[in-house]
Length: 139
Image 1 (cartoon, rainbow, N blue to C red):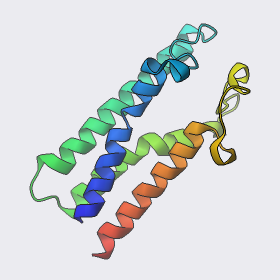
Image 2 (cartoon, one colour):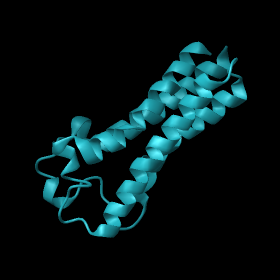
Image 3 (spheres, rainbow, N blue to C red):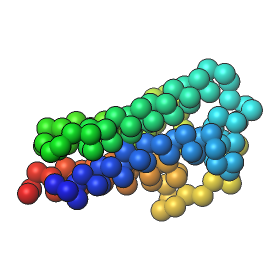
Image 4 (spheres, rainbow, N blue to C red):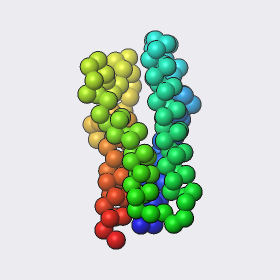
């Protein structure tokens, strides 16, 4: 289960990426927290999302490394918490009026593999969680 633990630890650290991308890195932060077109309530929810990532990532890391030994049930809890941020990201476009990229940034935002950057990240990270769970339950 050791490799699974480290995969989930990586996913937990990725939860801090929302803060980094949405508030710190200039090229992506201007599309989010520092976007002058965004209304205050949209920024409120962006702040909420960033904090949910920090809280979830921290809680998951605490579960993974705070108790010894790490049991399979605790591993599942840590994996669920770490992965929930990215599951929510992957499912968010199901709500009306949402988009992966705001229209004013469509032309300047790359589309690796034909996907929006956060779309690709959410799919890859959800895949890592599945791989970690499969590995943990197969040993």
